[in-house]
Image (tube, rainbow, N blue to C red; front, side, top):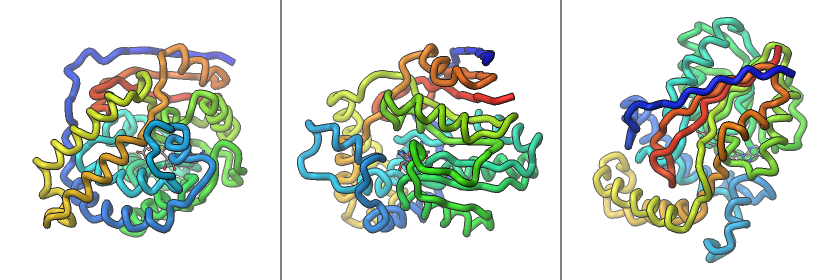
Length: 312
Ligand SMILES: C[S@@+](CC[C@H](N)C(=O)[O-])C[C@H]1O[C@@H](n2cnc3c(N)ncnc32)[C@H](O)[C@@H]1O
């Protein structure tokens, strides 16, 4: 094993709110209400996934939370306020993914969990930039984000395979992959699961393959941060009701209920420091990472590691 790590800290001005691209804004306006509807039936109770956050957050669980609908049904509404971490925060993905696809235009690609079609859209832009023709399989433990990816793929004529599965333990027969990509999966998973997923990614890669991902740096999601997040969502919503045509007719209070619930449950297991990244990816042959400022979620703004880990 040999690790070549590079670290560069961004010193530029921190964006308080990154500019939501007009095309993304338009498509989110269509798909956010759909995701809310899908989440009511497709988010089901599981032992792992986003409901695990809620099950261990006793202080915030007023009534039993039986599924991850609070997360997947609210995710795109919060994207319209730019309050959740998405691949569009990082220009890094386009350069990293398109470089890999230029070298391997017919790469076998795994999207290793995604809250919605955000990562697929980012991969789509890289495919166009590289003029690639990869095979794409998307795994998530919940059906709702997979449905969102299928919706996006149908709209843009992409061929994708979606699989509902637990990436920590289920078989992935589509492996080996040339590229595994995912945004912030490391900060979804608790500390004890993080080495399991990096080990898993290593096993699922083909020699010469790479993992491309990001992971926010920070501490615990405190009650104060949750309160601040809920307050910010309400403030931003009041100035942007025109982004929510389905609720801009006296139904904004329903969005506020979604946002308050999300703020109560949403829990990041952030990365401590550079050493943790080096340890997590120590079985890879090459590792490069850099910290960059992002708008952040509960902790805003914050820094995030942009990571490429590869096998020879
Ligand atoms: C990849 S992460 C972060 C979302 C990301 N920032 C984005 O833009 O898509 C969130 C996803 O992880 C999924 N997830 C959580 N635990 C999982 C597991 N053990 N196996 C597969 N998917 C999982 C959740 O269902 C959720 O859709």
